[in-house]
Amino acid sequence: MILSNDDILKQLKQLQHWHLAKNEIVRNFEFENFRKALAFVNHVGELAEAADHHPDINLHGWNKVTITVTTHSSGGLTQKDFDIARKIDELRMQ
Image (cartoon, rainbow, N blue to C red; front, side, top):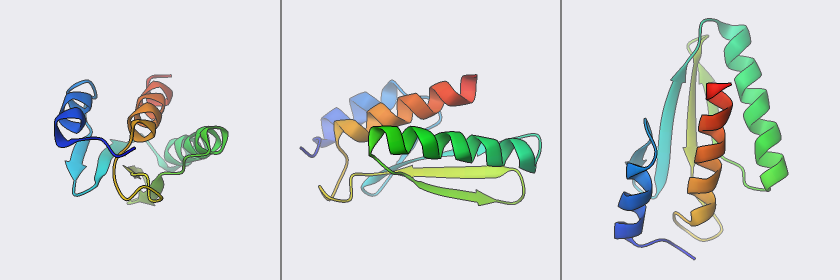
């Protein structure tokens, strides 16, 4: 079920560094080097496969990763998007 604008804003307040862009939530990450950025991308990929919910992942500029999350099949943001965003944040803290 697509979340209301109020629900989206409430969920975003609970996430640091994520922002709303149209019907998606986006976060940018920066790493020390390419190897660590790539390792993070691979961990996000494993997490996404396990959750059966796949964000768009962009590795760019040798050490930067942009993650974009939405539920394409629903046409907007759902609870699944915020759940995976939290799991991605947990990966980053490890």
